Amino acid sequence: MVGKKIALIGGAGFIGHNLAMALKREGYEPFIVDGLAVNNLLSFIDSKVKQQKLYRAILNKRIDLMYENEIEINVQDARNYDALCLVLHKANPDVIVQLAAVSHANFSNKDPHATFDHSLRTLENALDFSKSENSSVQHFIYFSSSMVYGHFEGKDVTEETECRPIGIYGTLKYSGELIVKAYNQVFELPYTIIRPSALYGKRCVSRRVGQIFIENAVQGHDITINGDGSDRLDFTYLDDLVQGIIKVIENENARNQIFNMTYGESRTIGELAKILKDHFSGIEIHYKSKDKLTPDRGTLRVDKAKDLIGYDPRNPIEEGYPKYIQWYKKIWQKLAL
Image (cartoon, rainbow, N blue to C red; front, side, top):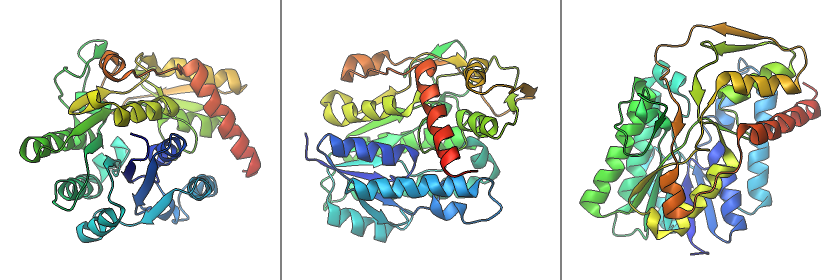
């Protein structure tokens, strides 16, 4: 229903600010709750961070876009239960999209405490508000991850594949799924769980593989692949994910469901690197051993999302990744880095 109020907790991040703008265009009333501390402005104050000027420019652009599109931003740490409840009670949202989390598996394994603090505590706070008598929340959307599957035993997985996560990040995301489903069992809170994979697109500072490749290439540096280049990921252009989330909000069939939300066809890291080389002459590829906590992955089947809610991803890496490369080149040149 157009006009619904949508609370995006952790919504100033890569996914959230893009989703907020898309929701606004569709006639919804998105508003953001974000402490700006994880992969955001406050985390790039340290002068030791490489490419600080670039990241701060990207993050400031996110904020500018929110103001330009008249999207309300509440700078509030969602780990503070009372403060979060005050903000949400005032806004009275119909839907909560839970995005607040540490977004990188490597960081999670290095700092488990911060990962649990930013992810599970914020999730519990949002869920507890949602089930309260003062809440009008009708739908809770939780962002999980393809990492919940752990090592793929075959070339692809469906939502029915058994989850066997490895490492802190995947285990935490799966724990979040179980907590969300428990709130549905006990309090009848309608939910949807989203499992994305290998996201890329404009204004990302999470240092995923696609971003790292481009950042090295624009500086004239070679790129390094963990492994031999044959590892597969289901690379997903952010615009496809955003349109999928809007369909989740619009469609009653999405209630109490788990959806893989990716492009739906895995590609090798080597294939991604080849596209990069087509846009940067003289770049060489080097290889190093893969981290033992990096699971072997592949395709996340999206048949369920296509059938139930009309999910329609349209950007294979041959189309999406060049868009990202051109955007990155433009901002790099603009900042004269």
